[in-house]
Length: 175
Image 1 (cartoon, rainbow, N blue to C red):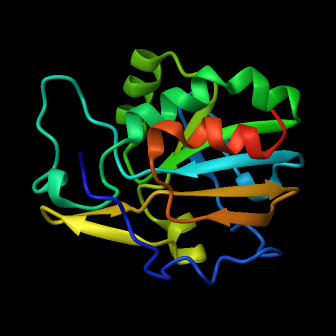
Image 2: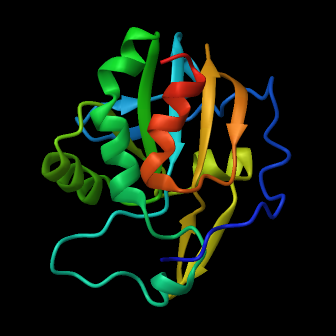
């Protein structure tokens, strides 16, 4: 029902061989995580925002292509987490939301993986991640990075539809 994002080319510079930025990000379980130093295979799904029950979405959210879908996307990775692990992938969710909001969402949704906060945009700025603005707040556009030993080997952008993204990606990875 919401508008689908188009490939506006905003992620074309994120190519295989790009090293992740060496920055520590606050994670939902408290300790900082530096994704550049994670020495395994990882899936980092970047999402704009997860809402809070009873609170309104940001202004014009329904009109922004690709804005909706972060909760179902996160739940898709939750529901298939063990299957990603069995294929040798750790899953991380990354947004510019503050850690407190991410922690509350992770608890509500029962997420087994970490969400990491890039509230200062250090990670996003280093990779020049695509973003959009509404209501005077900047949000990251939805994309997914497949990484090994801190180096990107694939960038999926745009991601649509978000609610089937984890299942589609798992099928591509052989399962």
